[in-house]
Image (tube, rainbow, N blue to C red):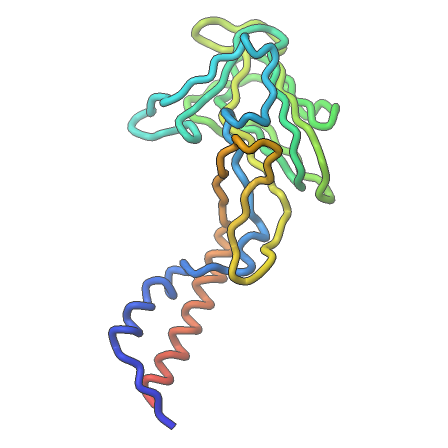
Length: 212
C-alpha cells in the first residue's frame, strides 16, 4: 500500500522537526524559573530604603538586566527575602562592591565582594529534595551614591518539576500573589538535542513513506 504525501507538506514540517521546536515531554526536567526583582513575593526591608529601577540602560548595546529592572539599596542592614518551593536557587545581581551576606533557610551561604559590569550568579544552592525554603540577602556595610551596598536582578528557581503530559512542556513559577507576572522558562541544551533527534527520526519516517 502506497501513501502519497504532498511535497509542500513534508517541506513545511522540516524546519520545526530539525530545530526541535515541538514540545518535548522531557524538556522541563531541568527547567529553571526566573523571578524578577519586581515580583511582589519578594519582601524588601526597609521598603523605603530600596530603589527599584525600571528601563535600565543597556551596556554596550546589550540589556544586562532581566526584564530591564534592578533593585538596590545603600544602607547597612537593607535586605530582600524571598520564599520559594524547589530543589535549587540562584541569586543574580551585579557583583557587589561591598560585603553582602546571603542566608538560605537561616544558614549563611556566602558573603563577599567583587566588581563587574554585568549581572551574574552571585550565589547558588541545591537541595536533595523539593521543599519550601527562603533566601535573604543583606547589606553588611553602607554603600555610596555610586556603589550601592546590595542589589538584586532576579532569583532563579529550579523547581524540579516534570510535565504533567507530553502535550505540555512549559512550567511557570507557582505564585501566592495574583499580581505576579508569568516567569520565563529555560530549557537545557540536552533537552533541545533530544527534540532535534526526535525530529530527525520523524523526518526519516516521512521520507520512507514518501518514497514507497
